[in-house]
Image 1 (cartoon, rainbow, N blue to C red):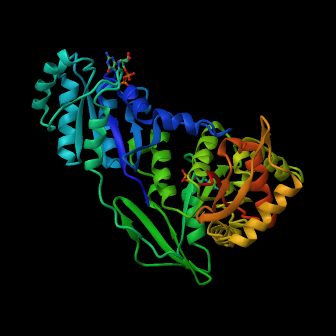
Image 2 (cartoon, protein in one colour):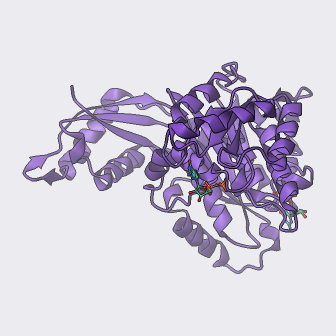
Length: 437
Ligand code: GDP
Ligand code: GDP
């Protein structure tokens, strides 16, 4: 299920990034604990009253350098209108309405998307009088907030989540494998889509699935049904989209959320760059099955060591994706394209793997006998019982005497033991410790 998207829009210096940080602050701190995951400060997950959503600070997106300021604000607003379910227009209560505010408000108004108007920098009750003039923007009731003092944020979030759309639950049958491709521009995503769908034994359904502006392509291969999620997003679109890598990432993230298996595409010709790491980090965090696809392998000058060297680089740069299989392909010459779908199926199976409780407990028991859990100040961790609570990805709960005694390294050790018994290739595994009540 794709979570709703909330975009923050407004001219520079009104306090967009301050507000963004207020809303996602705590969550960012947690996420950044995952070693090796590069974080993007413009796009993050957030949650309010148990409702998860994505938050985008459009102000941080770099559009073409030569854009005039106004033009760039318009682009932000356009992006927000295209991508977001709810738009937060931030204005500066200490300055009053500016021409730019009015211009953006007009655009947003025409879009008919729900807009929540936040009047920022209302740092104390005396300033509340400054709020009224913003009624004239025609965006409904202006909500006074102070990003700096963290006031009014709860009311603002209450208002935001009121506008979340109701999604219908399951778009596709449980046994349909949902696949998406993600990667920076020009790595060959659309070429790969065409190569995959053009395979001899692939039968593309006539009827495309559509969810909002995303176009999905259902197909079958060897009796298995698949759907390529948001194939439209992998194709070239207008100028605004091409000029923003952030935009492609954002769109891919949403596709990824709706997928069982994500193909993280890398350009073999250029090697791994920073942007690839971000993309791969997102794939890992989303808890989806992951396959790393090195494309353009035809264009790589190679000897017998090249592939192993590339594998070593990937393992080094994407340490947290140690479970992901790597394929070397060429969308152009079709080299090894026929290995992609069988691998996708295999990873989807592992992603949905269930381990029976007795088997899991035997495994944990043996692991703790071989290497006893750590102790701290004379107290030793005891694992009483283990059970799998979810699939996609496989998620295990360990009931322990004290969760404080569960160390990251021991958790890693247990994960490795589980993976020795069940390969779980391509899927992350989640292990949660709970205090035995
Ligand atoms: P952005 O350009 O819209 O992302 O704005 P920033 O979040 O970078 O904030 C611009 C300036 O306004 C910074 O100097 C902030 O410290 C300041 N600022 C942000 N929120 C508030 C607020 O609630 N009250 C006051 N007084 N200043 C704020
Ligand atoms: P996207 O932006 O990730 O969707 O990338 P495209 O599929 O549009 O490909 C970008 C460029 O790379 C195009 O010029 C393609 O022809 C080229 N390309 C894609 N796949 C391959 C490949 O396997 N080998 C080579 N040599 N070029 C490729």
